Structure formats: structure tokens, C-alpha cells
Length: 295
Image (tube, rainbow, N blue to C red; front, top):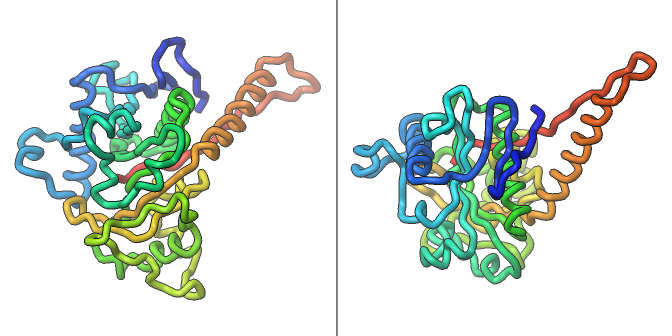
């Protein structure tokens, strides 16, 4: 999929084929994101809505008003709220200050992250319509995050990422793999709050089957790991969503370096494709692939 930025003052404004990503710009678009979250989390997965959510058909909480909402639109569905097919919720320091905390603070002690110099970004509520879970949609979501990181000069990204199920013993292989192979360095290591802490050290290192563990990880967590992401100490069982959560931390230099390399290649390939062919050859357009999805 070839991506192209639109000419505007928006922090994120990228198109690829019939898909387009930008931030929500009004209440109706935020509600469209909430409705998509409801369909994915509560109708397709095992989350339990509050009566208010069920009546509205939307997933919402007290953090939504203080976040930015990345939205993927399908032009074939139009240009308004009905066209929203993917979303990611993001919060910077300014929003957390106005709200009083980051969402992650309900599950993890994140003082080491809030003390980090520079801007930090919390990621959450990632989901994609079931008919759009292709490489193109995931790539566009990752590109949107990269554009947002560039615009606001983000240094650290973090958030709770979920594995399906609420029995850590059944998830011991992927949890132990994350603990032994991707534990964050002490200076960037959130720890699950004491009353919700579940050890991830559920198997000794020599009993961790790496291929089996990686296969059990949701695509979103795999995507973070590809960017050099780490996990905090301890998992948290979230019975409302029917998941077991880990705290993921990504230094954004990994994101920016990856995307700079990727789009430099894309520009070079585009130039080759537009140049006169020589010796019967032709340029080849290549695009990267990002993984996403899940809560």
C-alpha cells in the first residue's frame, strides 16, 4: 500500500488507497470510535459492559474527553462517523494532568515513566473492524502513531496490552517468555500495583518454548516487540475485559528510525518507478508491514 500525507495542519493526515487516518475532530467522530470499540470488545470479545454502555452501544469512560482519538476511515463508506473502521486512543502528559492520572495507573506504578524527561504517550483502546483486519489497516494505524510521535516529539510510549483469558496459569508460556526475554530495564520498568500483581515468572527460562510463546502472543504485543518494546514487572487480570494485561514500554527512537528507513526506501522506489526504464527493467514498490489489533 502506497501512503501519502495530505497537505494540512493536522498532526496526523495520511491516506493509503481508500483508507485515511487522522484524529477525531468532533464529538460524533469520538462516539463513532466508542461504538466501534463496543462492537469489538463487548460484542465480539468477552468484555462485560456497564448498563449505561449497553444502552448506548458505546464503550466509554472518564478518560475519553482528555485523549486524542486516532481514526481510520474508509472512503468507500463516506467521510463521516459511519466510515470509521479503526481506532487508537492516545493521551499525552497534558491530558493526564487535566484528568488527574493516566489510565495505566489503575494497574501499574508508572512513576519511572512520568519522571522520564520529554513528552510521553499512553496508548490504549486499539481496535479494528472485523472486516478490516488486514496488513493495510494495521500499517496505517502504525503510520498514524509514528506521525503523532513526530509531531509531538514523543520520547516514550506505554500502555496496557492484553492477552485473552483471565487465568495466568493458562498463559504461563507467553507471560514467562515476556518476563525472561523482554523485561524492561529497571529505569523504565513499571510494576503492577500491589493488590493486582500477578507474577509473570511462571516457568524457568529453560522451560520456555520461544516459538510456542510467540505464537500465543496477540498481534498488538508482537508489534510492540518488533519496535524494541519492553514489558513491566507483573501482569494484571482485568475481569471486566476478560483479559490478562501486561504493561508495554517503547522508546520512540525505535519507531522513528524504523519509519524513516521505510519511507526513505519508499521514496527511492517511487523515484525509480517514475524514471525511464533502462534495459527492460522496472522499479519495484515495497511497503513495510505493521501488526496491531486487540485491546
